[in-house]
Image (tube, rainbow over all chains, first blue to last red; front, top):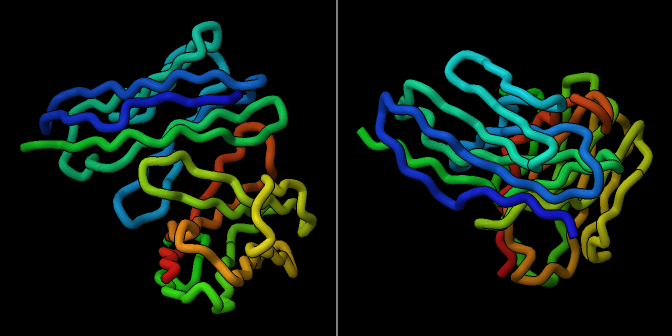
Length: 109
Length: 114
């Protein structure tokens, strides 16, 4: 079956760096997405990786290794507003998005 | 403002009721989706419409019935639901269903079945 694994919850300190990992087993691969979802709000797009390597976008970076079925989202200079759930999703060979359950990130002062 | 609007935001319904969820997108996208989001579970894709035609139906019970009258509107008709159907129902749209086209989500409808 197809599966996306990410930690259920993580805690980090304001101003610090945190890395949220995502591993996947899917039938084919056509890209990996990261979304941010604040409580009670819509998920919003953060990043897209289809080739191996690091994509940097401001304080957020996303890394992909297709051979390892692995990605991470790196958040730098954490702010209180970064407290949210972070969703990893992979587009499989049928272009269907397979979603992880999300990682709830708690930022402490 | 996400460009995708869902109504109502909250809905409480009995198991014998019939209700409908509405989604509207103002982004000119060709694909629209219904997802179910339950606590601590992955997003579950329910239905996909591309150019107003249903292209995906992930074995969703018939008590959920989608309707896509045009590329900007999507409905989810609900009847004789069960308590386990209580969840957040999210609508999304994308330019198309392939490649790097990211999905834009609505705020969701929080559904409680009593």
